[in-house]
Image (cartoon, rainbow, N blue to C red; front, side):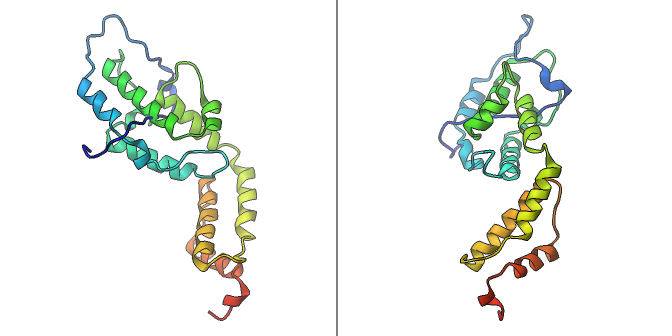
Length: 200
């Protein structure tokens, strides 16, 4: 990843292990590897997570998939998947956790940041807070999103743009636990198509 330039950062998920703070015991002897600090600082997080997570964007699943891929690429998934941190905490682990947290902060909107902000968070706690917020109230959201999906029409959109809107609507339903199959997608696409394509 030496070709990657730009500075950026962020982090997070939660579990019972996520409440552990970031302070070190006085008897800790682990050392921080300065080369790793430079390595993480050189990562352009937006090349891996090219969107901002926002309440109004309906992009949680896409953001989550990209962020998990980013952490997996640099072997930092334990900081967001609920894996217990070392006991006692080491400087290297704390450095990695700060890196993941900064990645999270740089890929979420101010509104999301304000919602999940708390004193002395870990990346794991941030991740869990964000996930809980975006996956809450799934039943009423599913009703609203199902209605939006079933009533979507092409209007003046091109066939390609209409197909993309239909896919987005289907993805939003999947995010709330209501995935649709291909046949439903096709039938709904034909149902809402502009009449001028009736003979196509």
